[in-house]
Image (cartoon, rainbow, N blue to C red; front, side, top):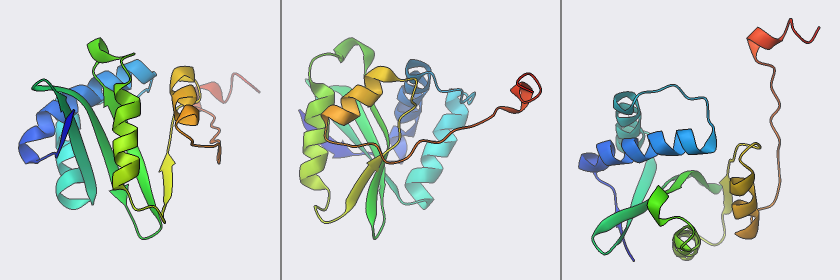
Length: 145
């Protein structure tokens, strides 16, 4: 598997995969592919994010989007294309990132709690629970009172 850093020309592809990721993990983000493309372009060009595309046999099979600060490397998104899941690609991608990222920094990732397979994957990769964010969605406030 080969890896390469994403460039501005990859933003549409990244947005399309991000759109699939949103659906697959059950996120409620309503953005269109065009909106996701603009957001991705902004992240890569001005907000300090880096994206790496992973290719196998000339096919993009995964991407990782992360940002490094003085204290940590935060993995914002990891996505493996649907038809190549359960082949160990996610694990290989993470092993590659673990070898690439600075060893002295904290590594963080966020995962939706209802994404049970995602939670299991991240724990299997060595991440441990740190924080749980709870919420009340405005339209449900009055229903619980």
